[in-house]
Length: 295
Length: 274
Image (cartoon, rainbow over all chains, first blue to last red; front, side, top):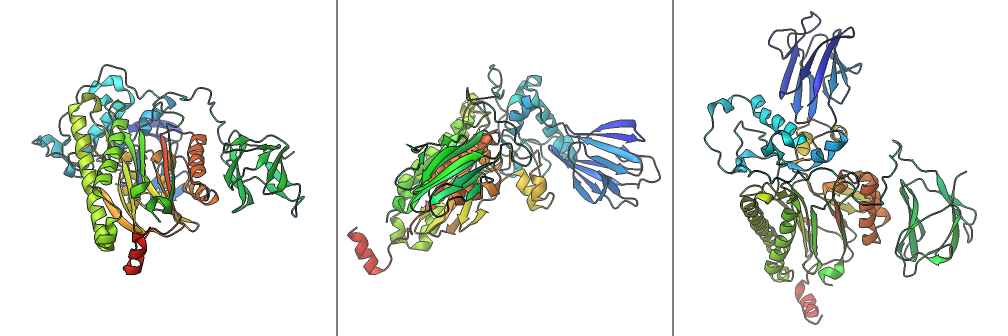
């Protein structure tokens, strides 16, 4: 659940959970977050929350709304964003799903369109109020998905959410109680034994030492080719082509086309990918090449 | 030229690096030009039941009801209409079967699946989809997403609430607005497209499209164009190298030769002696 922490001059005033679809911020008393300061407009800004995402929108305020030092009209809030309204600051926290629950969160879920579902049961009048209340069961259900032991019925990973018309859950029959077995969504950190996790990619996508191919024979002898792309093809199209793949754990060569395979250090490549080592010799379409890491 | 000679195809499905089982399911029937991909969800491990039922029921159903040589007799417009109708019928049948199974088996409650179906005939292709599994087309060096996700994120994009750049940061990526088998009825989106020789078509689950940038998919399709098998292996590997957080499936179809049905009496006569 995302939240805002309101502060002024470094003093924390209060914390506000973003439970509503629309959270109003302003000077007047009816706002969800009231900031009683003359620099703040009566209705200054609104935060629209849709499931796990929140957006801030300036409501045409006199003094404007800033996010991370920049004036915004509308902004998609990201974790740790700082919203400034006059001298007041609202820091946005959206606890990214922790590693343990990440897999649960990423499970594909369905948002149900009530119009197409089975006819809904008679509606209790209380559920008819507005869309904000309509979104509440969703929030509750989602928190429950995080901690399945909290409410057994909520461990059901299919999430039923009404988006448009305010209606009670139109689910046909209620889901039967889940089997007693522990929820299987528990993510296995690593499925394949032996497959070690790749080193995290550097933001620029170059976690690897740079490497090159140098042509040793033929007309282009002496020429070098930097292996900067994820895929680099070598050889002659239509005759014999191989691809060098740059992966987090090294460089690999694989045959792509041609009736015969290229050779690596004198041995045929076959159809499999082969890891390349420093100073490996490749022969393709009659041309010899050397793979090496840049010093 | 028969369909299976004109269309080169390759497919691969992989559990990824985080999930311990694979809820994706793929099915290829090259003889009738049919390729199906489904990404199951919900229930206790029942996602794979739903995706498996979807791919096999729809493939078997179309194998029984659709004869690609019919399009010769029907004429192109009728063939287009027929494929759309037959696919819609098979989807409705599969939806009903999955929904009924989930109602009658507590361990399958709430299961459902996304779906992409492509049926190639007479230089055309009928595409049906539900949910966020996708079809991409590479024509020349340009890649386009043919299907539009039935997802909350796509609705937000359409309404202008968020930009494509912001969408990459969204935490609502996994929410689909349509799925097969969760309600008594389902509305698939079905369109017919003309194909061209040299086109490559990629069906994939979100385990690929969420882990590998479109640009990287495009470059892979171009670079490895001559080798469909290696292309799908490379795509799955790239998704795994980037984290492999979901099941990954890819079906690639390359139009190597035209597959129009014979027209005019000379062509028909020739076809008789094939």
